[in-house]
Image 1 (tube, rainbow, N blue to C red):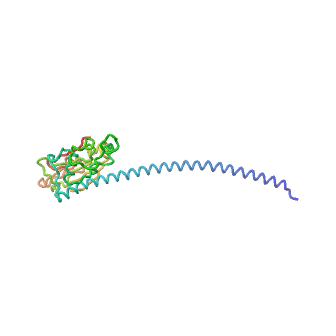
Image 2: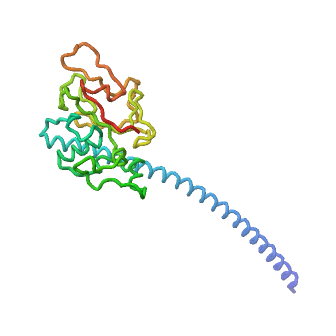
Image 3: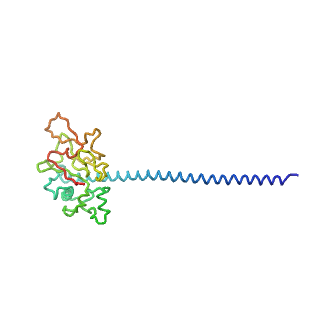
Length: 266
């Protein structure tokens, strides 16, 4: 006759043993899940950091493209007005010799009232105009009189601008042996150092240059690969044809004879 008590005892023992293993397994599973959670959180944090950095780069690139478009628009506006033979104003024709004076001159000359051409949204000075409750803000349209702009609005303008002096040729097309020359560039360029200062619109990380032929370039600096500069020092057709064209990192040194720069002192 079968020994049922023995079988029952063995089954019960096996059940207890199995149950114990299941509990241990469950405990192990819970511990492993916590580790997984920590790993996932870490990965999410890393990916979030990468995403934020990428978005920052995208927004920065978009801002640079917008600034480039502004320079193109300024140049095209003058080309249309002058029917190709673009002339820059001499200082005596401006309300004041400043970027603001030039902006008002451009507005009156071309009837383009868009104030955004003269500001860069990412610029700290422009941001201060919009975020400070006591600030006048960026003008909704460019006024016809420079006196309608306050000092903060003038100083937040994005561009340094080259203009012809009293005895200079005001045309942008001058057939220089040295080629096109810079006529507008991002505020805060430090001359022959070839860099932009930290208070410039892109916080020292470069700037745009508009040339007399309408081309716009963005430079991290203007030193060039060999540190000799990205600009050609202005040279006339009647200069020594055999002489090498010298280069410079300073846009002012690349201007034609008797041209000067109107800028904002940061």
